[in-house]
Image (cartoon, rainbow, N blue to C red; front, side, top):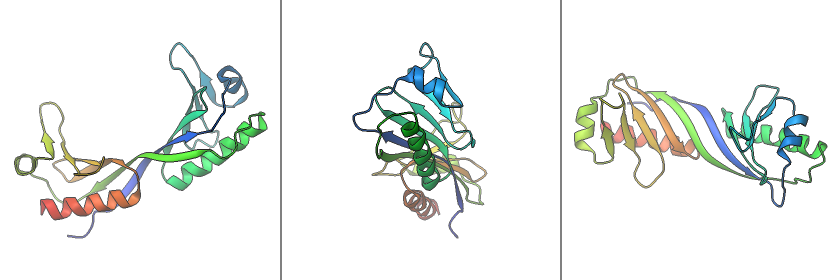
Length: 176
């Protein structure tokens, strides 16, 4: 069986500026597209005007970048935001970034016997009355696949494209 083609739908990165504290009220009023409501959430929600990735910015100098389709796209958005922060007078320097999660979708082009898979593999969880998909955890990683009867699958928890591809290969080998 050929490898299932996958499409990355979301990349989440943590971003850390060393020795920086943000004034969230000031940031929210100076960044176009930023929202800050401390009673609802303790950070600034900022969506880039280009409607690319979004950011959750915290006073500690840490933030999360969500919604990019590629790591490179997230890194470009982080660079652009870093430039804007410097323009606002923050001495941010180069941030440390780390991929926390990649979400990808794929289709194996075959029906899965979820009951049978759940019985065969201890790393599979299937409770159809709670959730219609089977959760298949890749041993030794934080990666999990949500398998649905029709062959559609969602991968969560990967930190790289390689982990996604490796997981697809393992599922193809294991379930065949």
